Length: 68
Image (tube, rainbow, N blue to C red):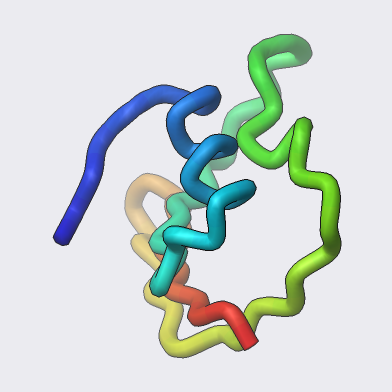
């Protein structure tokens, strides 16, 4: 299941241990402000990189991680 939502919803899912796979895109932009995605995570969790892909034209890097 794919669930879309904002940073608060994502934080709640992480806190409840509901995440099987993290798919993150790294955008080559420095904003200087905004809401941190993992701000309220209380316990450190190691992630294993499953795959990544770089998009040369945009500089975006798409990553996929599984919790260890």
